[in-house]
Length: 504
Image (tube, rainbow, N blue to C red; front, side):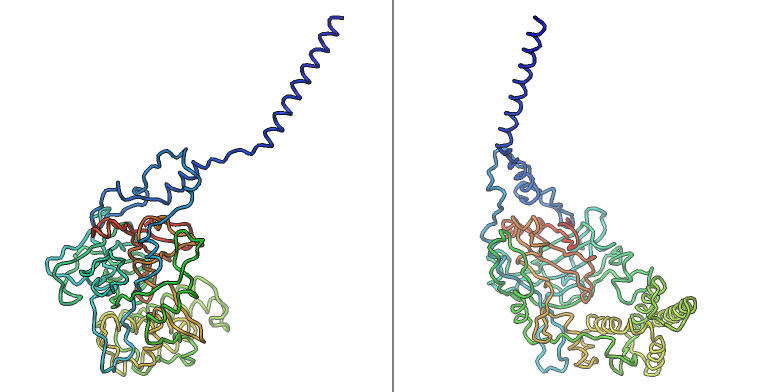
């Protein structure tokens, strides 16, 4: 009897416990869990809200990492949800509504009676400095940096300075290009004596050739496995201020607008219309040169043959039935090897002569006949080799534009224009620029855009010799540092369009 009573009581107690557990579960389902807003805010602020107030000023040539600029966020557990919405200062918003673009002084008509005066702004070449100039070195490896650009701040219109940019002096950009883009760089504001030209400064004897192992793809005259030169092509430009269209209100931190929106402003800044009519294989059905005087010099021969060697190497690696379709695979490879060997012979012969010495008309005729006989590969090489040969002569000797027919110059000019037109449509890439909205990825601005001004942005451009592995180089500075002329506190980052934001 007692056993029965105890069993019944135990069963009742177990049932009561089950009911209590079920009730607790139902109440928990009805009440959503609170999200860890504070932790999310801390992560976002730590990644995207750098501050320079506590960061030490780097010496010229030192890499400055974004992570070193990001302070710890205190009291994050109490951060309100509004902290997730970043805000930017008025001066950053003003910068997002403008751009100082760099319009190149590309020769359009060498016979013009009133050529444009030459300024002190250019890509590549050498800085225009006095004899006392000390070439900057990187802190990581101690090696000298490569000169990237010189901007004449006196040429910048007052409307584009945001009341922060100096109205005098030269702004120099140096980066380490020993083996592609490295971390070391220097931004230097030069206010001292200016040299008479771009050749007043002697190169450091240990300045390495730019782009290292990728030299054959960066320098058009370089054979695979060889090295290039430490000096980038010199292309003159002048800064032009443009207004940008109103940004999307949904973008708290504005980014560079689409071409459809900014194209008209770039086209107006370009001034004289530039048609988009690039040189193509269709122009040379018989593989004749672009004009009877081509190639003009021995360097042009090096460029054409180096491009032919690269194309032969590519054809040998990747089978293509369209190349010599009537030959067997072994015969096709023999034809490719023959073209490659003969191209190297021409290249070696050209390299033994002074690069810019003119070709004898008889040598020119023999070379053009040989090139035309390399029919299958020459069709693939011709347009880019011709463009590179013409551009190399122009940036080395601007006066050589008089030797190039005006129609050919006009077609090359499209590669150097801020914007061009074709069939009523504006064609424009992201321009190199300063004090403007930065480029972004998938509608997202780089983290530094919340606190820093985009001092300068340079986009990879083969015509300029800017081979950045598909990345965009951005130099940043805080408004406070710009006002105080502390350019040594600038930050360099690299934006990779193919993956999330990347540091320099």
